[in-house]
Structure formats: structure tokens, C-alpha cells
Length: 588
Figure 1 (cartoon, rainbow, N blue to C red):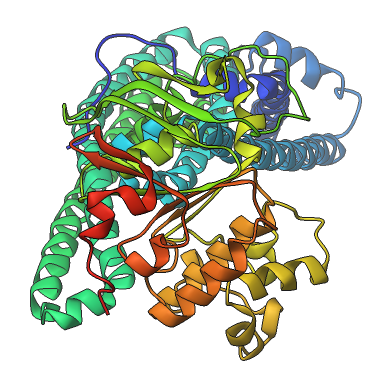
Figure 2: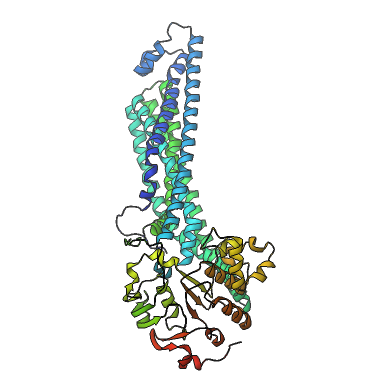
């Protein structure tokens, strides 16, 4: 189940929606005016009904309406009734126009709220540091972006209906109290009883809401697995097991939805019954108190118009409670602390043109696993260095430190004699490019992916990078060439094709430091050798760092660094390293 916040706290959605607060008084005012017009129109029924019943006695009509009726005493009854009926109809038409304006304004505010929430979520995801994504559940994040944001929009829509409905209820309450205070007190007590009952239902619905959000995430996770791992599922013959796991999650979600629907099915009839009982009590109490037929009729008319406002408020509250799980999820994401901004002098001319010193680096992941432990080495400028070691020795973590996706917990990385902590992080990253075995392609075309670091690049530049990455030939065979869309995460392409596009993207950046992290292990050894020969001429980068399991690939490097349990076990010219000499020639 989702964890909920403890104690009182300010919702992180408030700053997001603060800019729209100026519209809320206008929404309330229009709702108030609409209800006043409707109430005035209904109020005129008293003199009209009294006239039609030939009972125009002032005692039967409240004083103010008696004065209104007296304005037409000089007219004959037919003309007087026509004027009153016309005034009632005009007020109702005017109320409709004001209500339409209010609905249009509410729709506009709702649209703005949708923009603000999604923009805030996108901004938060972009500003959070990389370590957050190492700890966060990717399924949870994707569910927040794809589903919970929409549910929050539904909740805000319900909240917007509360404002004019509350204003309207206040107007009708004032009119009811003006007509008969005693009957109004009866209505007030009945209304409080209804709200107390609704509160009990809301408590249960809130619990179901959190369970629904957690269940929906489980279904989302199972379905994403079916889309993202079709090959693995079939290779290991796990279709039936995945079907069972997915069906179980869907069934559990269905049970939750059914529980919520059952609760709603009970709530509405219960509220309707209580409202009907209140209506009957008012009718009998009015008769016993000696109210005129006209006054009782108008009181009941006003009450009948107040009940939909109360029902709107109850429905909106129940809807908001039912979406509380999604509200909490979006609030959780927006409440994540943004990284502290460190002011550096931004240097657009920053170049990684000196040796990179790794000085006693240590890094421990949140789960307590230590991956770097006092690592010390030098990456020589203008050379290509092989980074070697068994799986888990710390190679990928070191790459993340060099890219400044992570920062060392102790030790330092230096550019010459200067700590890179003193350099602008964004400027540093612009001078580093990485191509890895899991090339993360963005949704778009082949051209857009290769030119990602340089959106203004020409076709000639993109084609040159594709040629150097060994991608030009297969791109030419795609249905639309460079304009072919790669699909989400590049899933419409093979692993080797994704890797070569990722490599072309890295070369396109013309980095000072190029890092190849098993960047071509999905292509055959001969093709990889050609690629390494093309890119190792120094045309696309200044300094290179290569991670590979192939000796022939690493053979294009000048120097080598061997890691063992987060420490450097060997370093120096590549040919002098025992680890390199002991490697098998090729794995294929």
C-alpha cells in the first residue's frame, strides 16, 4: 500500500496552483450571482401563487415580496400575473447566461490547471539529480506521469464545482432562513446529519483510493513487463506464468473497483433517502406551523433547488476523496527536494584538454554496497584508455562520476590541478558523451536521435557521424531512412541498430571526453573493429575511455586501468597489463 504523509503539511500542489487563485473569487462570484438570480425568480412565485389562489393578503407574503407585489396593484390580475411570470422567466434566463459564463470560466481554469500540473511534474523530473532515479521505482514514476496526473486533473475539476455550488447553497440557505427561520433550522439539522453520514462514507472511500492507486500500479507494472520483455518471456517459456501474474493483479484491481462502486451505490440511495425524509419533515412542519400554501410551496421550491447544490458538493467531495491516492502520488513527486544550486561561473569555452585525475574516489550506494573504495588513477589527455575489470568492479559507477551524474562521497576528480567541483556541471557535461550497451533512444526519428546533442546539425554532419558509427548502411534500408521513427526507447530497432545510433549520437556531440561503455557489443567483432578504427583517429573526440569485453576492441587503446572491488589493481600502458594479456582474443 502507498505510504501516506504523517501529520500536517502543506501540499506541494499549492505553489503550482497559486497563480490561478485570482480566478477563484470570480468563479465564486458568478456562482453567487447565478444563485441569487435563481432564488429571486423562485421568490417571485410567492406573490404569483398568492395571486393565482386569490389570496393576496400581505400576511401570506414575506414583507419584501409584499412590497414587490404591491408595485403591480394598479394592474388587473391577469396582467399582474403575466408581469410576474415574465419577470420569473427573465431572471431564470439571466441566471442561465451567468451560469454559462461561469462554466466557461471554470473550464478555462481547469485547462490551465492541467497545464500547470503537467508542467510542474515535467520540471521536477528534469531538475532532480540522477541518484533519485537510481532509488525511485520506475513503474511508479511512469504511472504518476501517465495516469495520476490525469486523476489529479479530475480532482481539481471536482474542486472547482465545489466553489459555485457552495456559493449557491449559501444563497438558498439565506433565502430559506428569510422565509421561515424555524423551518430553516430543521433543514440545517437535517443537513448536518447528512454530512455526518457522508463523512463516514468518505473515510472508507479514502482507504479504497490508496488501495486502488497501488493496485493500478501493479497492473501497470505487469503490462509494461509484457511489452518490454517479450523476448525473455518467450525464451524461458513463461507466458502462462506472466498471464497468471497479470490476471491476479487485474482481478485484485477489479475487486477494489467493485468495492468502490458498491460503496457509491450505497451512498447515493442513502443520501437520496435522507433528502426525501428531510423534504417530508419540512412539508409537515410547515403545515403544522400554519404557513400559507404559497409560502410552503416556495419554501419547498427553494429547498428543491438547494438540494442539487448540496448534492453537487457531496459528489465533488466524494470524488476528491476517491482520487486521494493519485493526489498523494503527485504530491510525493513534487515534494522531492530539488538539488541545491551551486553558483559557478558558467564557462562556455570549457574544454577537457588536460589529464583527468581520479584522487582517492569512494562511493557507496543507498543499499550500502560499496562500489568504489579509494580509487586513484589518471586518464591521460589526448589518449584512449581501456577501463577493465570484472562485473561489479565499479566501472559503470566511475563512468557516472566522470559524467557528473553522481558526485563522489569522498575524494575528488581533477582536470589538471583544478577540482571539477569548481566547474559548471552543465558545461562539463556538454564536453562529455557516452555511448553504452543500453542506448537510451528518445522518441522521435533516427535523425533526431543522432542530432540530439546538436539539434541544429545538418544532414551532412549527421550522415558523417552515422557512417563513423557503422550505422549508415542499415539506416538507408529503413522504410523512411533518417526520418524513420524509432518507437518508444527505440524498441522498433534491433539491439545492434540501437547501439550504433547511440554511438553516432555520441560522436555527433564532438566531445572532449568520449566514453564507450560496451557501446558495440551487440554487433559482430569485425564490424566493431571497423567502427573503432574509424573513430579512433581523433576526429570526433580528444580523449577516450573504452569499456569492452573484447581484446581486439581494447587493443585500439593506448593505456589501461584495471579495477578490482572498487580499487585500481593495475594501470599503465595497455600492453604491460597482465589483465589485458590474459584476456581471450575474442568471445565470438
